[in-house]
Structure formats: C-alpha cells, structure tokens
Length: 137
Image (cartoon, rainbow, N blue to C red; front, side, top):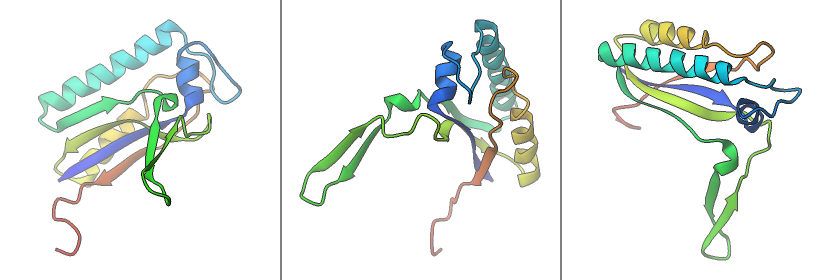
C-alpha cells in the first residue's frame, strides 16, 4: 500500500536553521543542519534500496508560499507569505510503498529520531494512506 509520510515545521524553524533562533526554535549550527541532512540522505538511500521510496522532498520555507484562490468578484486572489511565523505546516514528505501500516509506522518512528538541537519543537510525523481506488468506489 502507498502512504504519504509528512514532517511538519514552521517559519521560525526555517529561520532557526539560518541562524535566527527564537523562543520557539533555538538556533541551528552549521553542524546541526549537516547532521539532519546526513540523517535524511541515509534514510532516503535505505528506502530507495528497499524499493519502498517512490518520492520524497523537503519543501522551501513557508515565507515563499503563495495562495491563489477564486475571488467573489472574478479573477484570482493572490496572497504571498500567508502563514503566521509559528504556524505548523508541511515541511517535507515521502511517498512510500510499504507492505503494511506497521512497516510505515516503523519508518515514521525512525524519522522522529532525526537529530535536532536541544529545545527544538517536537512535531509529529503524519502518516496518511493514499487512496488508490478513489471516493465512492
């Protein structure tokens, strides 16, 4: 079965990774960032070798987000940087093809062990099965 596994973060976390810490997210050193990158690269290599990895990406900081919605007066409404600095949102994801929910849960548990500086926020790793059948079928 296919699953989307998601990690969360906020703009304050991205700022902390660039050396701008806050009460919500302590400053990351260059070594902290490198440790995270090494951990994620090793995980991705193992998931690719096992055949479970279909896709996975880290997303850019929320400040680079754009919302495009329908306007009640016609045409689109466009908003840049629509998130509050501390709002949790999708920071990265994997699309995995795993034999069971237990297996993807093992992977999610491993993701929670990614090295971060002491005092960093503790976000859940979210697992969502991918509906390959579609609604009403």
